Image (tube, rainbow, N blue to C red; front, side, top):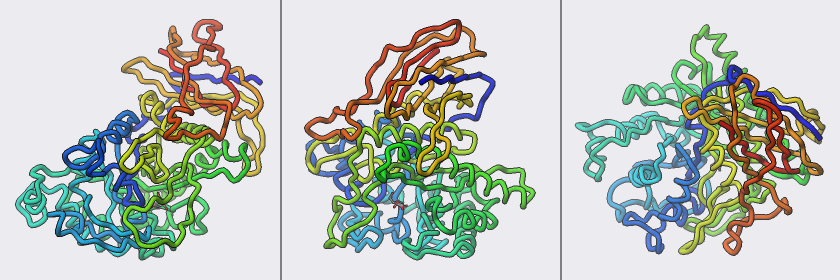
Length: 495
Ligand code: AHR
């Protein structure tokens, strides 16, 4: 099979925002307790944070981490997590049916984020919470001093403000599963009043409206239109969430990027409809703040426990290829998708997996994320693709090769990420950098393997791991030929 990809430095989609490489830590299962935090672990630092996990988070290249939920946020009283630990309440946590000890709260999480070198995207509670409590939360975190809440933060050991600049107005409020779920008009009104208070407290914050919790909600995209009619002038982003799973059809699963692309386009169209209706000059950006592959969606009714091991999906090579394709879709929509969070970061549907008291390993999906976060910088270029297409159960025209490309003018680096979805054959691709002058090949990294279902385990932590390839040949000036192995995700670096 053969394909051609043309890249032109003037065909710019948009700047790749560094927050495209975000992730998510929720008080859910073992994400916090025995994930990022485990006092008594041999690798714990003086605050109880696992240094082995911190190192993996740093290497992953994550830029911003959403916290504290998720569904958890809709029942969470943030004041439970501040002050002396021995006075913090143990609560029944209703979103995930666990006991929350509140050992970690916003102050500890901000400390962890500083150590990890990431920014924080915080969510306020628009389920059981009130607009006033949200305002107090911002005051506690961001106001310098001289008021009740800011002075309390100082008293509790944080003289400098946390300066959290991105805030989510609740989480998945369209979902009937959400604690105190709201109808669209009710959410629109509550979120609007909350947004006003939050921005009065700190006018510099950016707000994310809680968009549809997935593209197949019956209320999508009506929910998004309705809430934006209230919120358009008060928010900078609208959120999207979407998880994929292998339902037994590999071709269909590999083509998940097609669905993600359609979802993004539909949300852009909805936001732009409201823009037109409001005669607004502002374009709303998208925060794809939950995306991943996710299998174990149903929770068994279990006894109340602290940090139960729930939603601990183990990812295969196939899942990693799908994640690679999804990252390309985010890059290909870099003009409107300005934030995205791989959900989640540790243990719970996550690229990092830990043993209580033991080791931490990279799951397969760690690799495409890390490579994209490292090399997918600068401007996203629009690849022109000439490739055979095929149909799957859900999608009519899936390209055999699916690329995304970035050009970083400062360093001169050009990176092309390409998924070869063919289950049978390698694909020979001609890469034409027509308007670049004197491009040279730097590196070809491939994620592939003989067993699509292979996973990384504590016994074999590097079973699925990217490797270097040497199958890029110059054809003529600025034109190269490369053979992409069957079922592979590729990083092709040039400069
Ligand atoms: O990421 C796991 C859960 O998925 C989140 O809590 C929720 O927002 C979504 O449904």
